[in-house]
Each structure stands twice: as C-alpha cells, then as structure tokens.
Length: 337
Ligand SMILES: Cc1cc2nc3c(=O)[nH]c(=O)nc-3n(C[C@H](O)[C@H](O)[C@H](O)COP(=O)(O)OP(=O)(O)OC[C@H]3O[C@@H](n4cnc5c(N)ncnc54)[C@H](O)[C@@H]3O)c2cc1C
Image: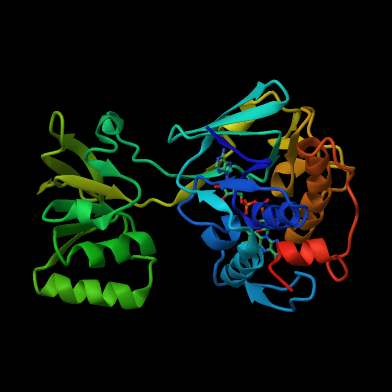
C-alpha cells in the first residue's frame, strides 16, 4: 500500500494543477487516471483546438496547455498511475484508502476528485457474448504492439485510431479494416496510405458492414460480417481491435456516498470539501452556487482545496500563506536558488 499526502483522481488540467498547488505547500500527491495519457478533455477531445481564456496565455491548444501544466509540476516528481480507474474509496481511521482496477492501493488523509465528467471508457462492441473474449481476443486499446505480431487482425472503426493502427500493425500482421460506412472520418493522408497497401494486397478493407457473429470457443477463430446489402462474409480472425470512440461515464464515483446533484459532487465553496471530511472535488465534477465549468475555475478550486489538505496532512503545523515571489521555502521546493 502506497502512502501519500493526497490522492488525486483524474489527470485532466485541474488534477495536474492540483499537484502544483499541493507541491508548493510541501505535500506529496499521486495521480490516477483511467486514460492512457494525461490531459483529460483537453487531450482526448480537443488537442488541436485553441483555448483563449487561460489567464496570461492569449492562445494555446489543449495539447499545449497539458504540456505547460506538466512542465510546471516537473519539480514535484509526481507518480502517475494511468490506464486504471479508481473503483473503491474507503475510510481507514483518519485516512482514505483507494483501490484501482489494477488492484493498486493507496492511502492518504486527503483525496481530490478532479474526475471531470467521469472516466473515459471505450465504447464496446454491441454483439451479445463478445465480452467473454475481452482481454484474450478482443481489445479496445493497445498497450504493447508486439502482442499483435503475426496474427489475423480485424480492426473496427472509421476514425484515426482505427486507421493509424491498421497502418502500423500491417507491418507485421494480416490486417482487415472494417467500417459500417464507406467513408472514413480519420486523417485522409493515412487513408491514402492504407488504400495503397490495399492495392498491393497487404491490407483488406470491408465496408459498409458490421460484426454479425463470432466463431470460436476459448479464442476467436473467425468472424462473420454483415454488409448493408444483406450479404454475409467470413473473415479469419485471431484478434478483434475495436475503436468506436470513448464515452464518458461517471462510474464508481456515484457510489462513494458523496452528496450528488445531477451527476456532479456538491462541495463547500470555501474549501471544496464534499460531505466527507478529507474528500474534495474540483473542476467539472463539482457543483456549488454559481459554478462555471471552466479550466480557470478548476484552478482556483484546487488552490483552496490544497490549503485544507495541508491542514489535514500536517495537523501539528500552522499553515502560512506565502507568495511564490518572496518565499524561499517555495522557491526551494521548485528547485530555484
Ligand atoms: C470541445 C471543448 C472545448 C472546450 N473549450 C474550453 C475553453 O476554451 N476554455 C475552458 O476553460 N474550458 C473549455 N472546455 C472545458 C474544459 O475542457 C473542462 O472544463 C476541463 O477539461 C475540466 O477539467 P477537469 O480536470 O475537471 O476534468 P477532465 O478534463 O474531464 O479530466 C477528468 C479526468 O478524470 C478521469 N477520471 C474520471 N473518473 C475517474 C476514475 N474513477 N478513475 C480514474 N480516472 C478518472 C478521466 O478519465 C479524465 O481524464 C472545453 C471542453 C470541450 C469538450
């Protein structure tokens, strides 16, 4: 079990800035996110779009903002646990015990929930019985591409993930790209490369069709595709990769006994504490009178929550408000002279 001063749930912009505010006060933090990368909505939904309302930054994209936040928290050497969802939150005397889907356990006097609109989850195949092959022959993300060498791979989807992986895996596997429409919405330059490989017989493309059934007991042997004209075609398949995009699910957060209002967590706007002592919520996930779902609001919220976190993590020390410009202690923590 790993002990920290604060457990941060969510690595979106607000979770990242929480690391900074806690770090300035000398508090350690661990960050857990269900996604395979940090940045939350900024990275997952609009990495290339410009944001115009971050104070003192006239314009930056979602990706640039994430990068700047990561640069800003570098001095704190924070541990990130990605690709895992926080499932369970339990009280242990004056601490909170957190368990993730990867069976990692953490303990801390404070939790800051910066869970946005919930965890991003892959949209799963609608076919009944498909779940029994999950993790063996059906995958919704790729952690290590070497696991997919020398196989018959059927890739479902019309976006960038489906196109990019079709191209990449065709270097060492037999790839069939399957989409329910004739048009792919992913990057056209990738599609052009895939069509060149199709002409050479390296990649096969099947459209407009959908998964109709799966053959195989323990593992998949082949799949049957149903075309819009009713025709059924069998494709030899060891592995299905499905990239139907992500959905946002509030998920287990709703089951932790927190005061909720319309899928958001009610907080005290003085310190952003929830109805549970030591559990705070900030960013899009929290609600209070006048709440604005803006990144800058989330930054303010974690600044105040971190003060309360200090009081709980260091009950024998007095909290002293200090400016970064004049505090030698803070400058040391930032690695400045
Ligand atoms: C298209 C678009 C444009 C936008 N433009 C602007 C703009 O110009 N200016 C602005 O201020 N705001 C803008 N926003 C809103 C802004 O992106 C959000 O306010 C901001 O991302 C909220 O940050 P957050 O850290 O609270 O949550 P998020 O960014 O949603 O991050 C939450 C993270 O928590 C993770 N998570 C949730 N539950 C769990 C769990 N149980 N276990 C593990 N991880 C979990 C999620 O996977 C996610 O990565 C825009 C939003 C969109 C969609």
